Length: 268
Length: 256
Image (cartoon, rainbow over all chains, first blue to last red; front, side, top):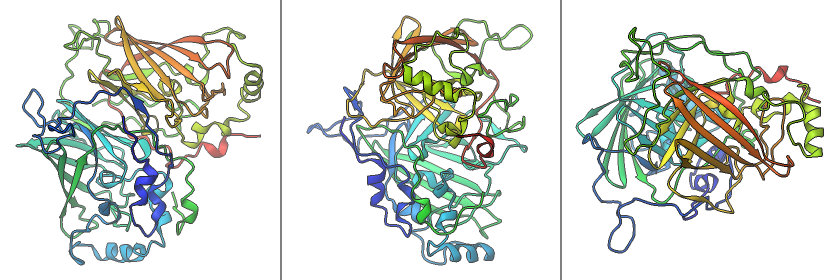
């Protein structure tokens, strides 16, 4: 297996007001595994053919399984990077708060800077890769970032009314043709949607539409519906790319030396 | 869906979630049942199409081993190296429990995380097994595809796990540890030389035996072995458990 960049090296390429937020664990680049079989389709030159058709499960549904990484690191900084200024429909209080956070002076209050989960959908945009394991009734996503995980239930269950609010919410998915539509609710309202600090509330409802366009590429359309924070739902589109010949590695939020350099302390 | 009563008894009961129903309209699990509809936990263990036992499910350990991995051994049965015995004797009365990295929300390591009082879920594919742990919302992979650990792998809390089938028993080798984890709350040490062998055997639908061998020649003069049990939770699902949120135990734990 080829060595790949460690989490910290990859995050160096994220230019941020608080450059180090994501470099919470710093492991040097090593090759962890040898004699690793690989099933990626290959072209005549032996290189992975990432534009081959997306694989399918025996039930005919697209198989989203694989190791993925964000196609761009810009969305973890600003989920609305592709929108024009003013296109995020903030409630007035939310606009005032995000304006206070915009210069990074409060980045020490970002839950993720305190080794708490980034939440959904931000964790998908984080530079470390993530692994999808798809079963007919559930999808598990293993995130390298802080070694957290998430389940997306495909078995028809619904979220009840008396759940404990969570950072990552409760996710259920349904197929719309070849697109997996994932609804996530039950959030605790503590997470920032991005590093610039767009707020969330317990009313947050995230819809992610995952479409594996070919073997090596996935589109994720994200809709943020949080009427306490935003006057209407708003949508963005992100890309993820398959990372062949690798796997997710341990990346515990350990030895968190960044926090002392970030502005304003988080109050739990 | 019924939620089991969360156990909040141990030092690591950092979050005590009340019993609640998160999910509704959960399809009735396709599991063997008694005539009265209750799960038949002594039915045969399920198998995958390839004939291998399917270990998948939500499992809950017997949590006495998180405090003392050697709970079933006699005093003196653990072959400590002299330095490790001295260190363990300093820790075992709990007076240094604040020094346990797990009390600081760092990963409890392998095999201790299996014995943590919180359940874990196995998802099995032919090429690898994933275990997602409620404890600290962490995960671990066990590769079944023949890969081997490189010699220059970065040391980790959970190590690197590979598994092979020995009949109906999954034999998991884990190496590449960072030597920082206490293998139980009493404080038995580990080093970077730790090699853990876990033998998982699902003896029927509802019960799994895990035989654990600790081979760490820097801390122990010879390998030593214990047996743990895990029980299937047929109508439960894992919850989110974020240790770093409001970790109120730490201030109450002593150190020297």
